[in-house]
Image 1 (tube, rainbow, N blue to C red):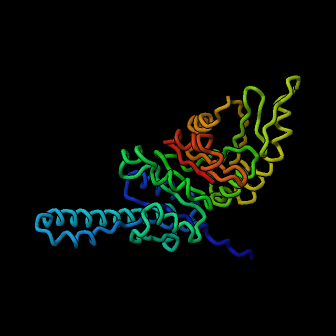
Image 2 (cartoon, one colour):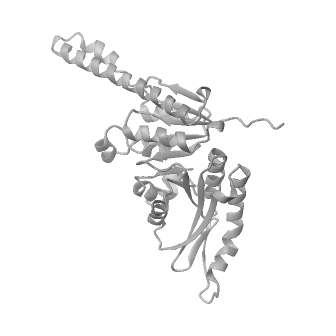
Image 3 (cartoon, rainbow, N blue to C red):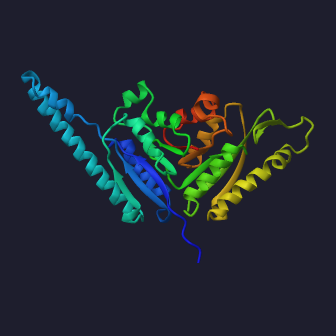
Length: 315
């Protein structure tokens, strides 16, 4: 009898905001309960040390009392949020032993503490697109965007809106990064009943992307789609094979090749929205570093900006 594979550890960042609650719901519905261990993670701000210093000043004493009351209420709210999240995961089929709660004190800062935790044997991290302060998230990079830029060793799933967890669109061009994205998604959700579409694109000028190269279809080509299939079919078949190997049913895998203009990001988002794909999967390009080298202002960065109602997987 074959031994059961160890569960995949998924870190879910929680700050008590509405979007983090939606991230919790998305994680509970997208990851299979029988092969996933969920860790609900909240970094607690430590304000009481500051309060103890201010207590010595009579002018601030009343304000300190109000602040202490507020801090206590915030701590209780997070505890209630965690309890509700655990109940929700149980309702979705997760065993109690498959759910952990961590609420460490802030040490390096919220973002840095999450990044540090992500190196503790996790396979993915899920975070809400926005936190408590939408104005702050608009004014400066949100925690989610900072995590995407800094965490490159595991997938980061940025959840916006109320996405459908059952359908995933994989933007696929045959690159090492795209194939890695397929393999990762297959491992994380392969045994579930999700529908997954491998989505490849060509330009209206006849250019298409396979591997790390860009190709042009000859003008006198009688069968341009046949030429595309000849180039990309082996890559698509390999990707499909990886999904099947992880337990995904053949009838839940589809493939689409779409002619688009040069800017691919809007088409990826529109394809997902029009066909009820709640999640979009983007792979990094080969071994080139993500934000700093290739994706600044390009496909991945643009998708993250446009897909505010989707879950974007950056792998």
